Image 1 (cartoon, one colour):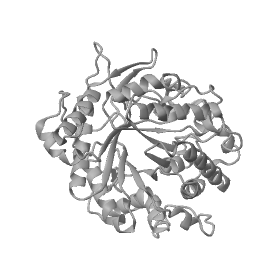
Image 2 (cartoon, rainbow, N blue to C red):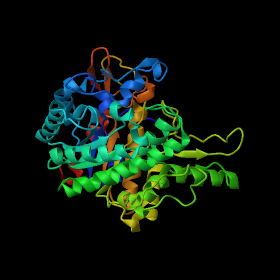
Image 3 (cartoon, helix red, strand yellow):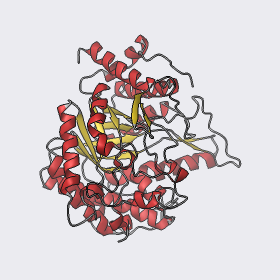
Length: 459
């Protein structure tokens, strides 16, 4: 992977990115509550499954927890000023369900609700569009003890929570997403056990996936019935699946990966059914009458999170991915053309089925960044963002309705089971002092956005 050391965008890049100079296209940054907020026991917040999981020995790198994280709970004004200084249009964040409703049902927490109320107002005061995600993996622990996402009741509790937050914030925010990456909640959390709640039950994971989709549909129905005006949608993590060779086994592996990772969530939302040929991947489901119609609610937008492609080799040992552009600090192949492919493929497969406008809600790169003389030089991250923005621009030029790009993440933060060992941010965080320092990539992102706006007359 080539690298770029300059924080000023090149003229040729600005020409290639012209499709993103549209005033209707938004640039943003994104975070999630458990990864940045801290204040785990403050302000009436109840425990989440991630509090329980991260405090269980052996579950996270170095035993790291999100108890303090980036201390955003106390430093949110400073962080909003930081976002405004980047010149972005939008900020995507999540609400911690246990902060606003500690038990996941019953009593609401006015102090927790007030935190997000002030956060939204603070963003608007700074001219930044707030984009809310209702669930970014931090289920109230009290609900987990009643069965969590493995029971249908949780889907109904979630719908009531969504209705409440939609009523309180829906007149001021630019979008509300029900879930972030339900695949991760279901399969990393309930099949592989890598994420909270740390279970390893294939059949349960499949049922959890269904209940997550059901909760999404119920939440959309509840918010719309209550007159919520904000655009409503969901955020899915997706990747194209590539066969290593032309062999039948590799081709079958790629098709299977696609069904399990993408189609398993897209088909219910847009077709009202699960993939017919996914039986070999998923356990039998308990689906009640009306569930699929509930899940198939029209979306106002669809958020897509993209990091890498899926490389499929049935050989032993597997044929390695070519990794022409290198790998990132998570070991993921850098493959920007996969984002363009994904956007075009979704348009082809679902464009006639009500595919709404798309948002790239996450895209980013972890690096082992080092603070030297008050600066962080991260040329590989600059190239990563540049190449993926070019992929979005190419897709828009081919007619795909992509409305925004959110870099993941605003700042270094708690990276789930990896603890604080991985740094995705364009802003460096010294966790000992909570000092924030803009990396070269932050300067490049700000300068690129400003240059595109200047070129379009939008500023």
